[in-house]
Length: 143
Ligand code: AMP
Image (tube, rainbow, N blue to C red; front, side):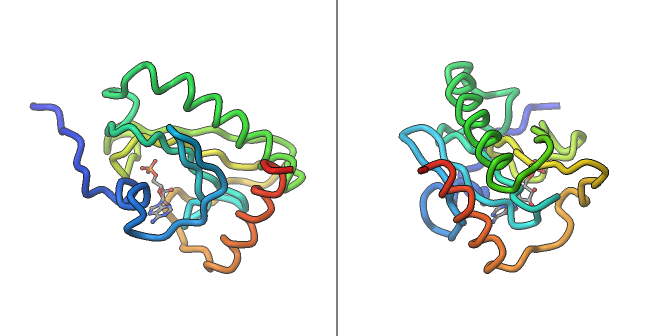
């Protein structure tokens, strides 16, 4: 079967172009980080390279170092911002793996002892909660 190709009408490409809103916590020349609208826990953040690729499988390797540099910064920031005990980092490739948005991204989720993750793409969080959580993360990143 032919490999699926990158579709620039995906929702993260629209967020990167500013066509739909997001609760951004970080941006540089190559990366953006914003709140997941269906968080698996409080502070669930997505780190997204601006360079187009469906996922890790077709990504330019030069994207991955800068991506994981930002993933590390965001992981440290969410751990501090939410007083978390740990951080889960997740990344899905193609539908069989659970991927639902076909623009490379990494999930960064604060974790607390004894508290399970909520389901992937479960319930929408209230915009005011996402805005407050984003401001907590920004305060650490910019602090
Ligand atoms: P994945 O299954 O790894 O492709 O994850 C896609 C993630 O994007 C899911 O966790 C969704 O909750 C999240 N998501 C979908 N639409 C949006 C959106 N407009 N803004 C922020 N996060 C989104």
